[in-house]
Amino acid sequence: MRRIYDSGALDRDDEDPFRPGTRDDDRTPQAARSLPMKTLSDALAPTWLRHRAISVSVTTPAETYAVGDPVPFTVEMKNALPVPISVPTRSPRLWAWAVDGHPEGSHVPETPSQDTGVLEFDRGEWKAFGRTWHGLFQVEGAEWVAPDPGEYTISAAINVEAPVESGVYDETTVEIR
Image (cartoon, rainbow, N blue to C red; front, side, top):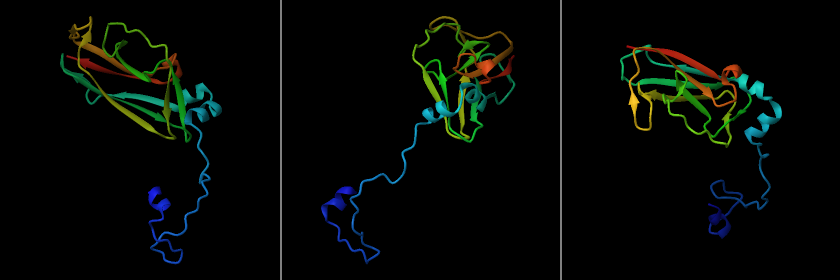
């Protein structure tokens, strides 16, 4: 669009409302630049307040599932404050879920990343993630086993140092029959 205005190809007339007027070549910004959310959050809110502002909840559509059936669940996170919040995380993986303490239903340990990340929330923002536990536990690289009938806890947390103590953790229990 700028090329059309700069080329002089348009007939300009300040009196006719259907023709463009003279172009103002003043290139000053029309609005103040905004600061990045992380900068504002770091400057205004201590870490404990940012953790307290975020709520995490885990829900499943049913409480009972058959052995081997997939278990869908939803993880919701909400910023309760009317200001943007950023939460520094221990790795680029911003949040994680687990079944009975096993990350993503796997008994196979993974090597943690040394990088950090930041989970950002706008003011009052909700984030919802749908995941599925396929009703199996990974015991080796390609070996998966069905769990015994019983109760299993599905949990989710923001990837911070102590999520339970920080309040950025939730869990729900399902029964496998």
